[in-house]
Image 1 (cartoon, helix red, strand yellow):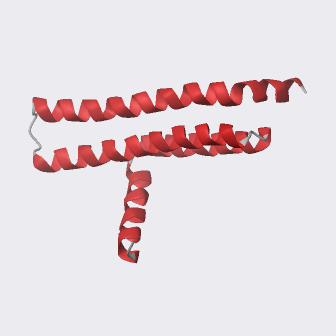
Image 2 (cartoon, helix red, strand yellow; image 1 turned 90 degrees about the vertical axis):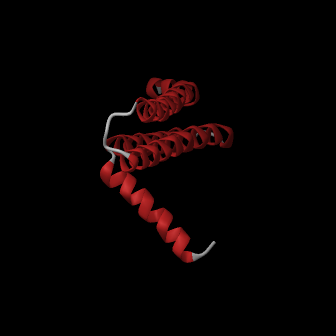
Length: 118
């Protein structure tokens, strides 16, 4: 990969964090999940699930933002097809975030209960 492509991608991620409130919420959630995983000493299998679910949330959030930006560039007028595209993209973020919460509870819940009881 060329260095400029890598820098473009980083600029996109910085843009995502600077402009999207939900991306900052995802960043905080990511930090909490990583911290809990480290404190609780979860195994490699658990890390795979946590990383996969976290990555899915970030990917859907980034794609949702990209779709919203492109749609807003196409037209500022209300358009039912653009509204549907935006809603579907937002729905994908909701599904991925909901799945990540379920995975987080399933993976981190039992060791967190043990840790709190100790």
